Amino acid sequence: MQVENFYEVGYLPLLSGLMNDLGLRRKIDELVPVDRQCQTTAGEAVQLLVLDMLSGRNALMNVDKWAAEQDLDQLLRPGLQASWFNDDALGRHLDRLHEADIHQVYSTFQLHVYQHERIPMNVFHGDTTSMSVYGAYTKPSQALQIVEGYSRDRRGTKQIQFGLIGNADGIPLYGDVHDGNTSDKTWNPDVLEKLHAQCAAVKLKDFVYVADSAAMSKSTLDAAQRANAYLLTRAPNQLKIVKAALTSADAAEASWSEPVSFVSSKDGATYRWFAAEAEHESHALRLIVVESSALDKKKENTLTREREAECDRLTQAVKKAAQTPFHCRTDAEQAAEAFREEQSSRFHQVDVTVCPQERVRKKRGRPKQGEVPPVDTVYVYRLPSRRTKRGFRKRADGHPALCWPPLYHPSGEGKRWTEASCSACIKGRFTLK
Image (cartoon, rainbow, N blue to C red; front, side, top):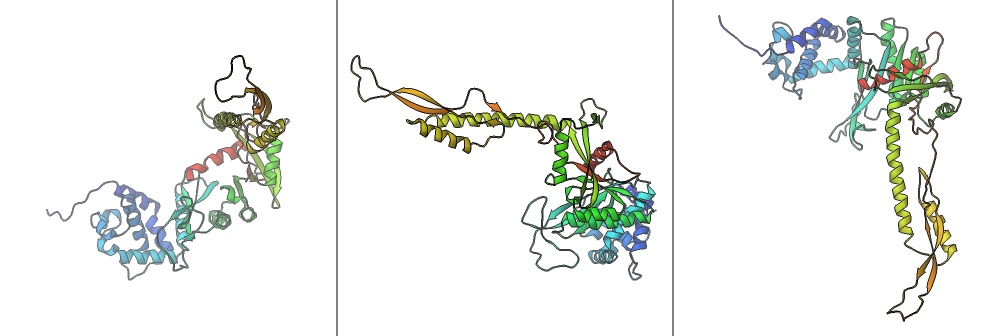
């Protein structure tokens, strides 16, 4: 018996088995034309690259040298040689993937995974992020614009952006790479149309799309309506309908729900909500103002610290100003009024009073025996012993209860989510992030 090669098994054969079970190579080869002159296929190249990344290597170069240390007969198929996966060969496969619309290839395979594993397809979360790059990148590319844009990590550098749509567990359904200056307000409507096409392929009539506040635009609302989708997002505070909803929630007769918890722990946060109807950009919406007990307490502690710091600041400011006496009451009152206007106060009402003081006029030398020293009346201003604290509206200003920006969901007959369902759904968004 002669031993030709030996390999470290590790966990890669297990991962390769999972990919084979999902049909990764077969699905990609169905979508990307196979070049008969190539000894490998795009599906094999993709599976090897994924295994390479999952092995812990960072740079996707010299893959053929790494492949020479692997059992390719077990990981891919018998008869493959590591030299067939050199950088030039992999580059040509990647070009074929791009020509076949890489985003469509990826989303089609992920849709197949959802069906194969019977993953629910009723709620999807969408989000984007950016990656800054180094270099000039002066030559424009038709495939991808590497330019400056809104950066999530640092401003002033050129970047590309990634978009991802998945379920509440973070399992992706669609992903793309787009220009560095693409706005979320542009990305959301475009991706909704593609998501609608995917859902239509599996005869899914409607779905819920969860996104951030950039989705609160006419183009996204129109795209959601065309896709027969229900949109769940955070509405910006500057909108008139949001301000009206907060005002209604702050009213004494506002009808709030009973507190509800989404966890079994007794110390878990509780939520309650106030619902309202509104219209925005010719679309009927349901607004939900959500109040969290955990954010309540956190905000209350923060406000207490800020209020105490403001009180100390005002006290020190008046103490310093009081060291300058005025010999005329009118001058003192004018200075006190100027002091009130200069001091920005969020928690306290600044009431400065002008008080007369008698001060002994000091003369040079030793006073004569029995001489009564002259006394001058001066005027100083100071804060009263009790500061008047400003009151805050309970909910509309978020003190002490913090108001989340209202969530909205297009209202429709036959399918109206409860406020509890909307709140639970928006919590799942952070898994995708």
